[in-house]
Every structure is written in C-alpha cells, then in structure tokens.
Amino acid sequence: MQWTQQANNNRSFRFALIAALGVEIALVAGLVFFSEHHVTPTPKPKVISVQMVHLPPPPPPKPVVKPKPTPPKPTPPVPVVHRPAPLPVRPPVPPAPPKPVLQKPTPPAPTPPPPVTPPPVKVPPSPAPAYSGVRAYGSSARSLVKQNVHIGGLIKRMHYTGRVMVSFQLSPQGGKAENVHIVGGSGNPLIRKAALRAVENSTFPAFTSHMPPHTLTFTVPIDIS
Image (cartoon, rainbow, N blue to C red; front, side, top):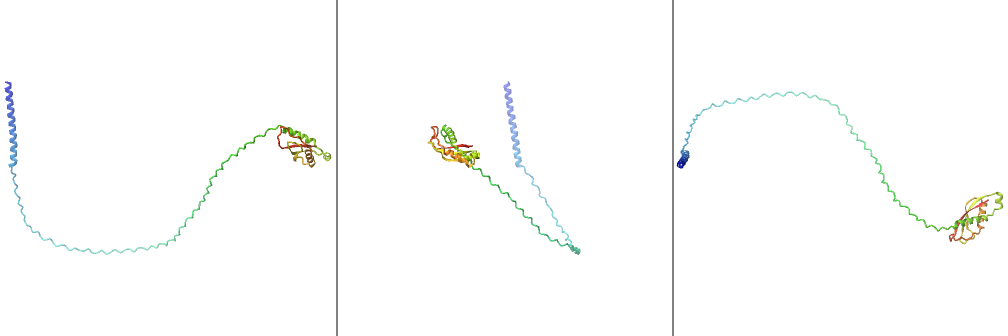
C-alpha cells in the first residue's frame, strides 16, 4: 500500500516538473517571437515653415568729428645753476715702499765635535831588574868624595860655607869619574871649584854584582864648611 502511494507521488512530481519546463519553454519562445516581429513606429517628419522678412536699410554712419588739437603747454625755463668749478684733484700719494725686512742670518749648524780619539795606552816598559847594590854604592861614593874635600886657606879666612850638587858618571869597572859637572847648589865659585876638585880626585871602586853592568850617573851633595 505504501509502495503504491510512493509511486503515485513520484509520478505526480514528474508531471509537475515536465509542466514547469513546458511553461518556461513557452515563455522563452514567446519572448523571442515578440522581439523578432515587434515593429517600432517611424516618427513623422516635422514641417518647418520659413517666412521671408525684409529688414529696413541700416541708417547712414554719423560723420566722425575730429577732436581739436590741444595747444602744447609752454615749457617753463629751466633755471641755470652755476656750479662752482671743481677743485683740482690731487693725485694720490703712492704709499711708501715697505721697509725691507732684515732677516737675521740663520746661524750655521753647529759643527759636530771631532770624534775624540782616546790616547793610545802607553804600555809601561817592563820594569828593570831591581839592583839592590846601587843605593849602597851611591852612599859609599858620597863618603869617598867627602874624604877628598880640601878647603883652601882663602875659604877658611873668609869663612865661606855652602852645599854643591855634583853629577858624574862611572863605568862598571870604577876608577875616575867622567862628565863631572855642577847641577845646583851654592853659586860661590870657590865652593863650587872645591866640590868639583873633590870628585875629580876620588877613585871609585868597581860595581858590585848587585849593580847593572853599564855606566851609571850619580848625583851627590858636597858640603863645604
């Protein structure tokens, strides 16, 4: 029973759908037919009536009246102004030439001091061998000369006294002195002569083994009193 009712409902829906489609097709066809066969009425042309009108002739032109020329106004005389004569223009005094700027001479660069060369180191000579007998020989030579001093009578009467320094040389063999001369002391000629005679009259012994084997110079003081 239900199935029969459902079938009837489906059939009714189909018929309604077909009827709606038919109506729409009929409407569309009617619109197309109306648009193709509709005639737009042509408007009637308007008739314009033209009437010729005769205008009156224009009035003659008025004569042009030329304006009277205005007489020129008299020009007032220009007063003559007597200007004073211009003063003579003194030529500009040229400026005094600038004083020459005395530039101080640039002091010369200081000369570098010459390189200081150290003095050569003197190598002391090798010391001579010490001879212990020289000093003792000199003392004995002085005593020997003192024994040979002879004071003359004039020196005694005049009471002359003084010391004379006498230098002389001796060879290793001894004997008489050589190169006898005065190196200082009294200036009295009598005393000086007595001192020289005392050395010349002395005979000296040979050098000892503690003395150098060459000529030596001796200086001895001689007292005259």
